[in-house]
Image (tube, rainbow, N blue to C red; front, top):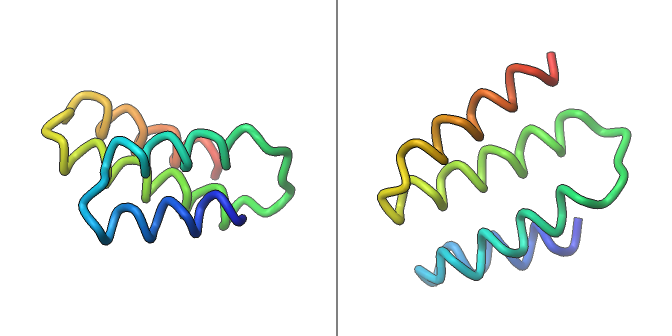
Length: 68
């Protein structure tokens, strides 16, 4: 959860690459909370979108649907 928060702060400062790194680290941690995982994936997708990496953003959005 800490890495997600760091990613959110970096995202708000426009440091999208660093935010992506932190969101990816957060997703590597085992978690039972599917809602938290979906939020991290949404944050990751938003970061890709801001960088113009639309395919990555779309693929990440699709990973959210797999959680359901």
